[in-house]
Length: 266
Image 1 (cartoon, rainbow, N blue to C red):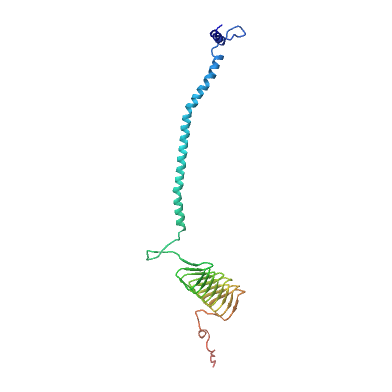
Image 2 (cartoon, rainbow, N blue to C red; image 1 turned 180 degrees about the vertical axis):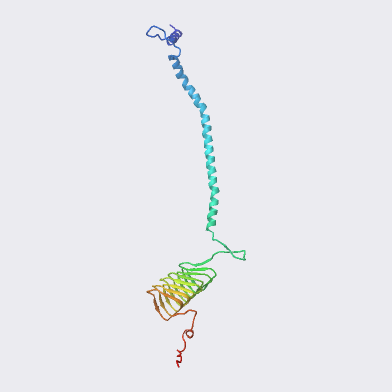
């Protein structure tokens, strides 16, 4: 038998209809033969491969679109953040700037000024200032200010200002104030004090002349004469000197008569 006859016989055997147990011939309609299954197995990979190849460009385009959109979104967000930074910096700069006040009748503004003598600084010579003065270092000379003075260092010279505040300071010279003089228990003054009001808890060796009220607290130590309108002394304060309390600067002649006159009863 030739090769052709063998192949034909094999095909006939595959296509042969199955016979049921009852002798009736079952129809192959709706049933798959071995040849159909074989053809499906051989054709399925080719179709799947074609579908995969056809889907790849679509997936690549989708991925490229998503990547482009993400890049654009990131760039847009970065641009918005960079645009917001100058506004924030401008806000901080405006908030940190000193508040300027408009001077009446003048186109210029009056900005609060301050003269500072920092620690570990020594100045020999007088200081004149139209601003507030803060002395944390040492000065050998007079300190003159039309405004307030804050002293926590050393001054060998006179101090003349509007209001004086001293904390842990040492002054060898006279202190003159148009307003109030206040210093704590660690402050020392070797000189006279002249002011409108005095609030002291430190040490003074010199005369004190106060037009208004003076208050000596428990750690106050004064060696010198005191002239004051109203005086408050807290228990513990030490005063060595004469104390005169005057109201309206009355002289003794206006307070006391020269003699006591007796009226004649007869």
